[in-house]
Length: 301
Ligand SMILES: [Zn+2]
Image (cartoon, rainbow, N blue to C red; front, side, top):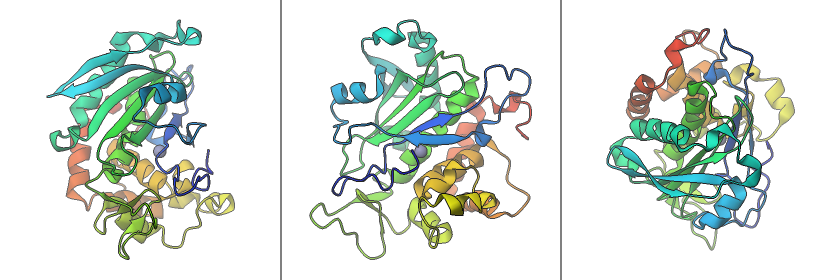
């Protein structure tokens, strides 16, 4: 839903309830959609008070089926959950398919951040070509440990669509983890002057999201559909216009999947801006060799 910024409950914004849907069609066999050109919409768990440190709640919200933990450079299955009756026949329910995406995930996360990702979950969800994903802090108020989940229905989507789903969620993790965001004062919900108030945390002065916000979102109305429709060239996708966090995640996905832009629209300027951060370039370099994007037609790469 594109209104999630305004769907708040007390001081709890739903800023980090991030479920992305990637659209493409099954019969598009010859010209595969470019994952970086996906159309994204977003929704969130219906019950906003769910405690995501409680797996029963998370399973209720997302229907998770496998939990992986990272041990060294391996993604190891640490728990299997009952498969919901309605998903017994879903192709993605097999451990083999879920292990494959978990193996991709562990390959692209740098060691210094691997410890911050508590678990990686998979679940059955979405429709063919439209896997879902979410990224949530394990502890809502510290942003120290994160959970990321990826859901698929058939599990045989083009591999890079699943990968693109993860890269989008990974961008949230990269930009909102505790190296980037300080805890907020829970009594006042106020951040120090130079930090960016995210609702549940304060983005540090030199954080990716704060700098991105200051450069591109100072005067952008959040959630203004009319504005978005009249400024499509300013955003890498329609969904990127939702808010600066989604714009960052979508821009990062394009930054990873595409060559450096040679034109200079505002959307291009955003992608080029990410090249000014060595850590993001490092992340891009780590992800790209593990993605099969170069087999795609029309990807421009
Ligand atoms: Zn998102």
